[in-house]
Length: 355
Image 1 (cartoon, rainbow, N blue to C red):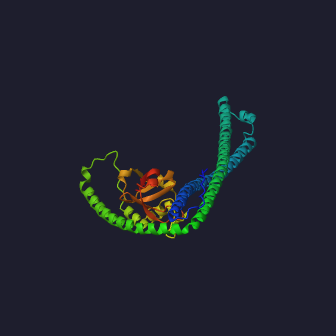
Image 2 (cartoon, rainbow, N blue to C red; image 1 turned 90 degrees about the vertical axis):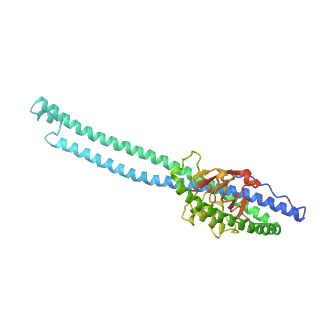
Image 3 (cartoon, helix red, strand yellow; image 1 turned 90 degrees about the horizontal axis):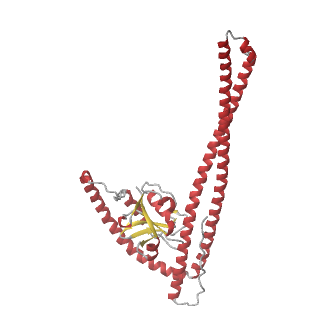
């Protein structure tokens, strides 16, 4: 069940000064960031539960098929037993008495009786095994059906949580509209700053690419002399530079919850889309992406590594120089931020390198 934090109401605007308005705008943006992170967690859990539900439904289909086979085998075995009984009682050995009377000696009597018993014993074992299999399948089917119902309930609860958070975001958007002038000023100032940051980042990435190519060449030459160490971090594949470039091409694109295309992105959608452009498939979920690749320490981060924040409620792509690109929250756009900034530094979870 997703826990939805309560959102404090924004106070009435008693002070109409620009500085006060800007502070209130920043407060609303902070609340939107919190809500967006909660919504990302809710969506990630919803995706995970839906995938689990699909697996349960697949198992149910398989067990229904196995149950049909078990029933068929049971009926076939029952028919075989009945036919053998008919044969036993209508042949020259129709009864135990006839078996004994038809024997040529005492040894023959014992042999005939043992043969008849072994046939019926075999049939009994077959029937018993099929019945046991049938009962097991039924029990398994019942358990899966219960799991199916439980998972359906979980999905419904998480869907309700998602709707609740979306409603709260709608409320915050209403507040944003009341101070949209101040927000526009903040965005304009941020856009000017982002242009400068992006230019510096692009230059740094180009230099990093040249250094990476040189490092690969050096590694190939001296690879036989390298002794593996326990703490060695595997270098990112060359495709990661392309993923960073694709993400950078979307600077200024609006945040859209659930978005994973150039028309709008959420945080995990941006990373998923950027990697997809270089042939790497990632799930649309911060939780799932955090379970992929290998962990990377903060001092070993390289462009293309995925950085996570706020209990996996948010993520971005590292671009070097202590910076990362991300889709922050409703009301904002794809932009570059610093890992050392207050909120990002305090809520940093870790990083993963996709191999």
